[in-house]
Image (cartoon, rainbow, N blue to C red; front, side, top):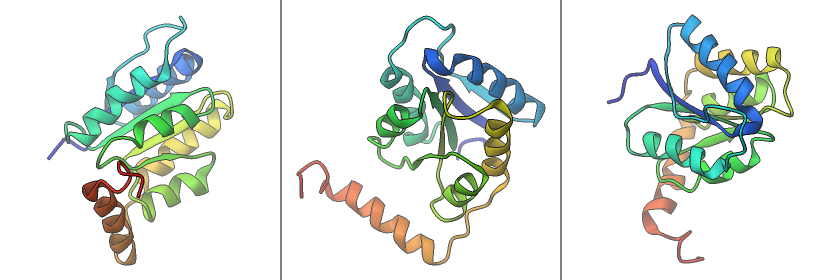
Length: 157
């Protein structure tokens, strides 16, 4: 099992500044961010960086990840292509909490051009502090896992 304190994080160029701030915030909160890029505001393709974090979560190398791009949409689509990944694009405290509480989201996705820094911090803290509720939600997550295993999505079924 991966260390819960280690969190993979990546962004594209549009969210580089927010990523840098969140890396510092994670460190302040006692987490060990694994910064998978980008390393500047030079133009970069979000799928390349979404893949890095999603692969690490999918393989169990880390329990959780954070992905950032301009809107969060591209990173969310990219990450959810990987087995065992439940990437949630969130916009506020409520969606951050529910993504963890009911969906056990293991990748938090945010849009740097959508959120101000204070809201992004609030979302991050809510997501980190919320526990998965389990119970009836286990059945629903199992159904998602079964879709991945059956290949139904790959076969257009």
